[in-house]
Length: 279
Image 1: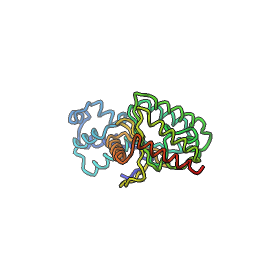
Image 2: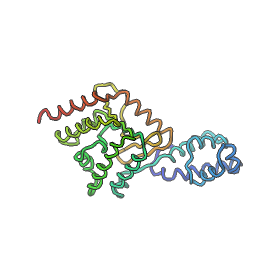
Image 3: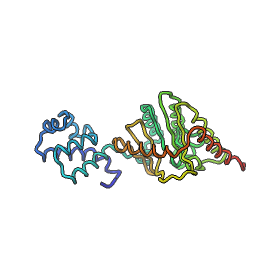
Image 4: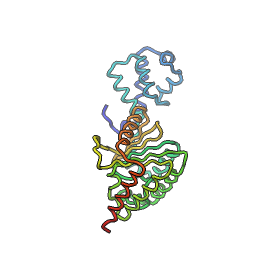
């Protein structure tokens, strides 16, 4: 199934209807299907009416029970994964107001205990100076002052000792010249300072290593239940366990190629020295 963002909103209802039709074709009542799948009848009813989005495991169990043909298994499995995926386009965020997006992110951060950020291109707002935040929003339409304030307010979560953060940046993200050299030096000093907090682990994937894999996009992992991936035109939100696990594996792979602790701070210090050398 080809990914089409506009289909994501319909995938849940399509999935519910497809499963209902398959049950009927198999000549099973909701109660009989429930017993054969070791589910409650009320759960089957909620799945078929779209009130509950079934997990991929639930969908596969139902497909086996109704003896669905291989082609339909592939199609409906793809629907199930799409039903656990949400598309949030950038233009809609602009229309609603980017400050509302900050409130949504703050809620995700408040609920999670372990947060992991893969940053191949730029420094995330949680780690950014006000100057860096403002520069990163320079392409956005309208007044962004509330958004800047929201990003700065969100940074308080870094000091919540009950949470753990892992920030994995490429050296490209560290080196990207979003600001004039003196201000970039301040930004990199902030990274080094935050890396000393006991609940923050900050790693940098350096240029000097051979990395046989490309860092395609920014993504964030919230515990083991949700992953978000950024694109130029929007954000994908994944809740299917297979998708989340794949992002966790990608994060672990890049972690093996990163430097941490004093080695990461030495890299940042060298960058700062380079920025200030010719001033």
